[in-house]
Image (cartoon, rainbow, N blue to C red; front, top):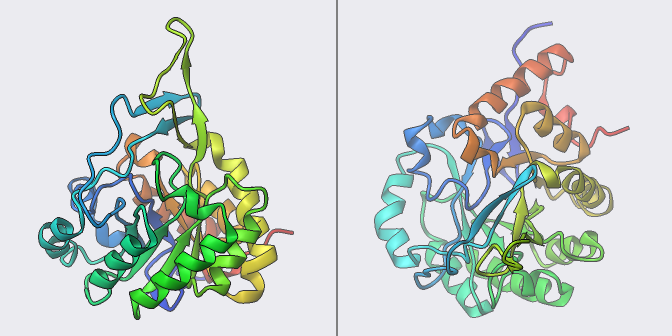
Length: 310
């Protein structure tokens, strides 16, 4: 067999050079990552959350390491829509990767306003609708846990986004993630991103206080991988398989083997999050590792992996 393997993917109509993304919130606005690697080597890049107005985020401390992971309660700190368009989009346009902008807000109208403003920007491939952030007082997870609200906000943002691919990021903090996934798909989502972080807490036994100023934060990293895999497989089998809507799988990915496992579970592509803080160039290594896996297993096209769990 030839060692030439096709690892390009069709992701909601976008032709990506490979199935590896960076997850939102872990690599800034894309230009920060460029100091460590060639962003063109990625299948896609997802920016940190952008809101209509700039946000300072939560009080510090707002990050704490845990066993096999970390908690963050950043609170969607960002430079705001207009500064992002003026300062970051010109840089993004030169990077050469498919860039998704993570969109957040406190009210549906704010999500819609951001989507409308970005709909005509050629440097952007799509939007990731953040309805699952667990560490903000308004918006975020409030939208993502109620199927009716998922339907309402997805429909409104899809209309505002025009031709841009709309990917909805789902919260794992629900009774049945397939219910919210189905609501998003039926409301017009072009892709699904799962999972976001799990709401969690770290306590200092000496002070009897929560370590994070926000008390709770979002747990990410290797600790959540088995749960994330289960949810990806569940949504693939119950929603995505029949609808054809692709899944971006994320949650504790460190290696090519982790990425392959998510694809076997049903993800068409994967996003690396927390591990970017440990190895800023880990995504490049994961891409190469996926190629080697495919050669070793005599897989000619990466799509053969998707949903291949027996």
